[in-house]
Length: 170
Image (cartoon, rainbow, N blue to C red; front, top):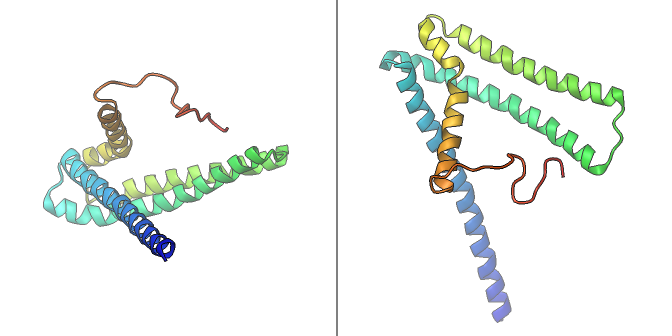
């Protein structure tokens, strides 16, 4: 009886923990989106009217880019799994994979260009130019602050891909 009770308690605790982790990830993502919107509003010096017109388009653009990035990551995962299994990749297979990756890169660039071009009339040229590199700079700033926070203010030295004994591709 004690074993059954302990098993049920363990199961309930693990379910609650699993749900709270998902909620925590969702909460962090929402906070990150809010911080990005705040920084973007500040960086582009958006008026309330501009922000009302800009952010719905920006969210739609981010969703499209997220979908493309997800598909690209799936392809990278497929490549990695083939390498780890020791599958033989012919020149034809490799060319096909490279072509698929190129298509995703091209779609992402076309989406970004279309998004920036589509903002004409909503944002001025300076604001659109600032927007071009914003996300890259924002992510770099967040990464740098996380590194600074995790290391107690110290910058980390060493290779980027060698984390906790794991090596790139193995």
